[in-house]
Image (cartoon, rainbow, N blue to C red; front, top):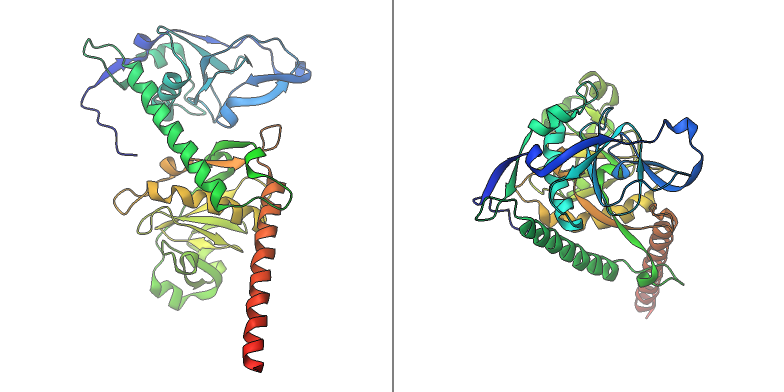
Length: 356
């Protein structure tokens, strides 16, 4: 998607968009019983949903913000019934918002969310003095129609990408790809994005070892040589915990490589450290989907930690909305078996020709 033209945008104080910020009404979690109602708290993951509890619905169609903790300043929109505890703030809007305009606002609000953190908590006086840039009508009001249309265009593009993905990755035997539920996840929900430091060819020559060194190239998944592990530790280089993915920051920006074992990355690549229990099949499946986003980056539009971890990609999900890793593993297993069958057939034909 082309970059947004902000010529007709205007600065607005948060107090011009929202009437109030009030805390959630629920008590602390240890006093709650497990149930089915999503409860929003101070978290930047899973839209702030920290668990499901046996509590009444208190809110719907609202934007929330984490008030403290490491997720402080994270904004999310909820078009479903939910409850919130006192670590979560609920924004009361001045204008009538729908799902699309609220999602657009959240994307903008999360830019100022970086002003807050564990030691800099969100308060109404601070937040309502913040200024954001929004598209404006000719009368100087926020242009919510523009916001809605923009998000709808993104949604349409995502749906088209999903159809392409479904056609590229066949389902495992006995399953229909169209009956599988899919959901978009941000990269940061599944991976920690870790930046590397400069690694030179001279270092690889002088401090050779067994640790794969990864940069931004596509050949060999970006591997440029091998370094000594202890040397990399002494230089405080970025080393993965084990099997992982990497993404090119520049050059072949957005290219995702699969690394079958622990590796070190240079300054033109980043480690995608899994937050889930990773294995080869899961990582290969996810890599294929992340590669669809490669076209979003270019030599002049480099991958940054912020823009990559906030990029979204679809995954098959279980009925509870979690990534369906079993489906992913079955799919890769089926593809491997299919390739092995083709290889065996090719080998048989080759041997027959040799014998003839």
